[in-house]
Length: 206
Image 1 (cartoon, rainbow, N blue to C red):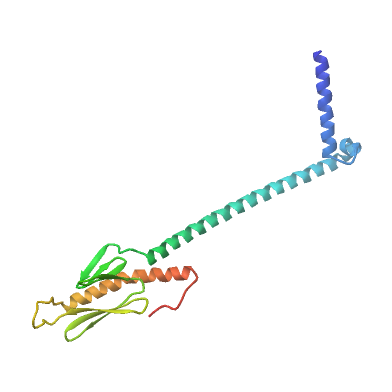
Image 2: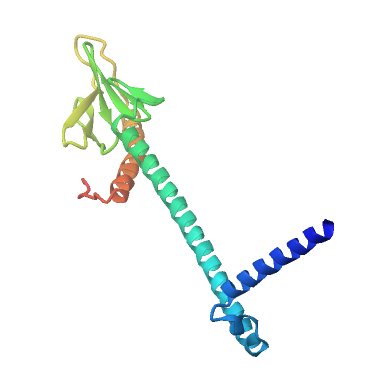
C-alpha cells in the first residue's frame, strides 16, 4: 500500500512539473522539453529574471519617492503651522514681561502700555517707530503706530509754578525712547519675514 502511495505521489509531482514546464515555456512540447531549445529556454528565463528585477526596482523607487513626498508634505505642513502660530502671535501677542517704564508709558516685551488716570491702552510694538524731541518745557517721545496714528508722551523738565509735578532728565527720557525702539525692532523684522514667506510682501513703512 505504501508503494502505491509513493507511485501516486511521484506521478502527481511529475504531472505538476510538466504543467509548470508547459506554462513556463509555452509553444509546445518540443520547445518546453527538447534539448534543441535549451538555450532559448535559458534566454527566456534570464529575460524573465531581468524583467522581475526591473519591476522590483521600479516598485522600490516608487515606494521611496512616495515616502519622500510624504515626508516633504509633513515638513511643509509643520512649517505652515509654525508660521500660522507666529502670525497669531503677532496679531495677539499678549503683553509679555515688563521691560521698563517712565511716566505714563510702560514697556513690555510685545506692547507699550499708555496709562492715564482714567484708563489705559496698548500700542503694538510691531511696526512702531519712535522719535525723541526736547522743547522749552517738555521732552517728547513721539510714537507712530503701523496704522499711521501718532501718540505724544510728554515729560516735563521745567518745574511748574504751582505744583510738585515730576521732572524728567533728558538722558533718562532719551534712554527710554531707545529702549522702546530696540524692543520694537525684532517685532518689525519678524513681521517682515512673515510677510515675505507668505508671499504677500507689501511696501514697507518708513
